[in-house]
Image (tube, rainbow, N blue to C red; front, side, top):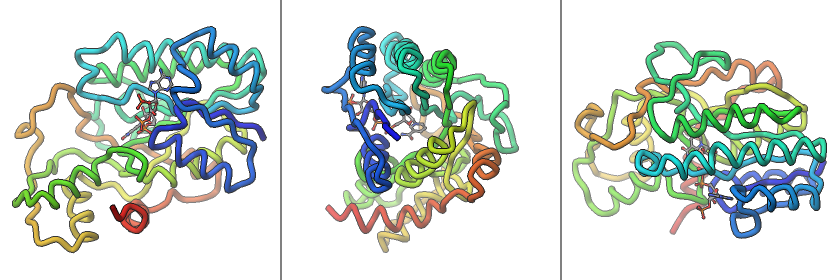
Length: 281
Ligand SMILES: NC(=O)c1ccc[n+]([C@@H]2O[C@H](COP(=O)([O-])OP(=O)(O)OC[C@H]3O[C@@H](n4cnc5c(N)ncnc54)[C@H](OP(=O)(O)O)[C@@H]3O)[C@@H](O)[C@H]2O)c1
């Protein structure tokens, strides 16, 4: 199968490239310098020239707080550009896999979000990603993969933020304990995307690692991996006001993924161990 990855220089894009190459797939990995997805003409030309069978859009505007003041830029990258990819995919009869987020939900649920749960983003970033989902649906063959709480060695993420705080000597370290989700190691997500892509799945699928936890629980696991003496203290999110509102409950149901692939999601705890083995610097 011939794959095109856009945003291939990012945290997920880099791991997806490695996953697909390890499976012997034919991969065109386009980082932002190779293809700016906000340029309609470049997108059409690039896709026609490379003629992939599957396009995975890993390119995104991911600065969640800054998006509150840069909503039009977020919409251009996460929304309109996805429409260009969808129309390019249709021209070459390719499938479009669009990576989306738990931030399309408002977090008011108390049970895991199913794929058809009503969307109601709380933030500019979430709204831009929802525009992207609708745009991706213009591709005749499309799959929206929603995921959450990503960490991987090729980009800034929560694990690195906690690690840096611990190394700086912040003690005690206060971490929010009233937001629940499922942390997801990007190589695990990359494997899940490869699986559902090769199965030719369409529609919406959720992928997150197991099990669910709070940011506080996640920080405690990071702290344990590091064997640090720092005290981790649970606090409520109102003690950490941020420009973008986060969903309090971000747990995605992965039932459809499990039915499609016949496998359970991976464990983020295993991912965390691997993360520390790989990111030694
Ligand atoms: N990180 C999370 O916790 C999380 C959670 C749920 C869903 N997601 C979704 O998962 C996907 C991958 O996220 P990630 O964490 O891997 O993000 P990332 O590391 O920020 O990667 C995004 C990549 O897209 C590139 N990009 C930005 N604008 C572009 C443009 N106009 N054309 C082409 N490339 C462009 C970025 O380049 P520059 O850095 O040079 O701008 C970056 O390399 C995104 O769709 C994101 O919304 C992420």
